[in-house]
Length: 457
Image (cartoon, rainbow, N blue to C red; front, side):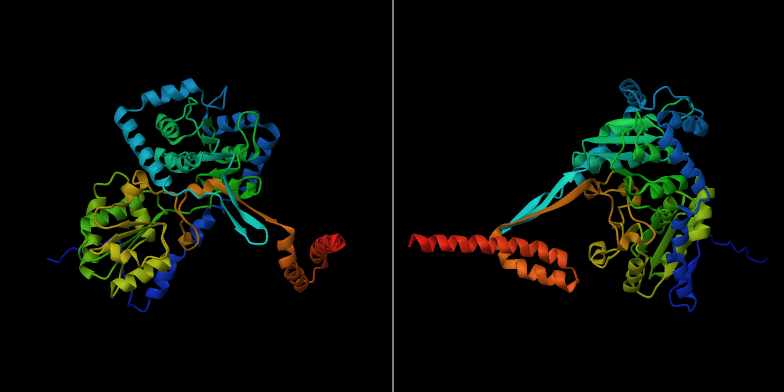
């Protein structure tokens, strides 16, 4: 009887194969995923939404909200009583977990807050930087099948830690005009001051422009559906924004000490986020590769969101077999993923080789999910290879730096000639004249002072 061969969903690639370079380049190319956030074929619709909010304010928002959710709202803002009632309906155990997460995330972000500084030089130079929080920030929570109180905590806590005076949250209401209680609970413990019942592109437009009820903010933080990304792009300049992220990513480096079932569970956990998420396992141990492949097939059979996970794994999942841990780390650094798991024996040593990653999870007992919910570091992470350039969301994102300087006459006399010279190199006479006029005054005052002294003698 012929043996039956089971097709493995998660493909295995070998780094030494001639075709690997092309396959690897395809895995690393996430430009299409980022472009999808903009190529929504709905920019015209978003422009109409922005124009509507700009012209009609709250009235326009109510119309847009009713069209999107069916909710007919008398007030766009969650009242204090609504907020209290929503928090009271949260299961006490869930409430405690949300509180624990907020406490840990707050403690982490309080460790190092940039501060103002100044310096003085001989001759009369005084300069430095003043660091202040933004005046008002807006947080956006996307609508969807699942709720994300963890995102509210991650986004609001750094702003609260640096004492942003006003933090507002915009989230889409349900058909009854209610906000999900768990979101209200997360907003309360994370330091949000006001909550508004508006989602999608209208929420972005309202916070960027300002309406009768919703204040205009300095910066908007929080990812969402493609129209949200488009609205943020179109309104950039009127309002600040966090960097746009693409689909979530996970890269795992594993050696022979890794437990295949655990690695497979982590890959699947990532895959069930969305069909466009990406999951990579890079290992120099062939046995780990095949055993993880088998475990993925087995565990998918009992997963609730198996259809989503299977689609993600089939489209963007892969196991890469290399010759050494050094080659594996080189690939991981080139990939520059959102999340990097070091499922290796000497994780602390291997960690020193990491150059590009949004967040690193060290060892076998640090699954990605602990970082997503309550470890402490922020889960707002750069994607699409942008970990080469950007950092996780943090307190710095809610601060602004202003530099200042003061020169006394003696310092300008010391450095003025060089300033004039540098302006001349750039073929600009105006700046040089600005300095020279002052130097003339300094020289004249100096001559007058010397003449006065000679007269006294």
